[in-house]
Image 1: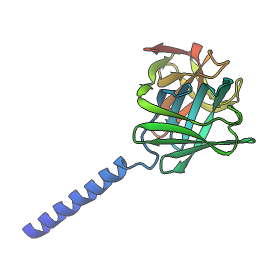
Image 2 (image 1 turned 90 degrees about the vertical axis):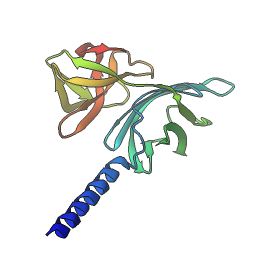
Image 3 (image 1 turned 180 degrees about the vertical axis):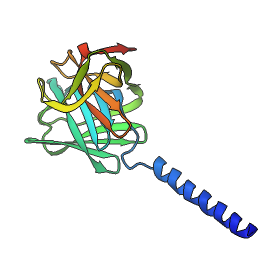
Image 4 (image 1 turned 120 degrees about the vertical axis):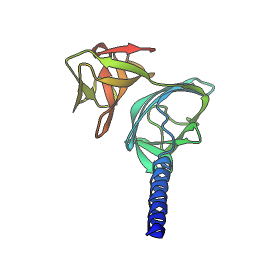
Length: 200
């Protein structure tokens, strides 16, 4: 009986160790949520499940080409995310506390041709800040060119969200936000006026 108890205890310990290891190993890479300063300009990132929302502004090249982008990249595996539109794609990587952006197929529509991509190190990173919802109900909006489409998801007065300022043009009235609920995490745009924020 004593041997059975020891074997059972070892089995349970191994099962728990495997569960912990599987939680720690995430092929999405690390969570890059925050504002990153790159070689060409700032990048705002917000991760939620299999999506990576972004806002990007940059100047590159000898003739000062401008990047002005906002959108959502989908998870591809192994810390890689892809944003796709009618002109081409952009690949994001989130590995080893580093973030990169690189051209995929076609061109990066929000930067134009000859954009070399960008890279971001942890020394240029700032975390999200906390906000409390002050409006009775605040709907999330799709992360895209504003004005964008209202989503079904919403938060209510008193809810806490993580937030980031957008860096692309024409978006001072909005914040990129993330609400972590009991069953799911939602990211999207919320109106700044519906929130009271701290440490922005």
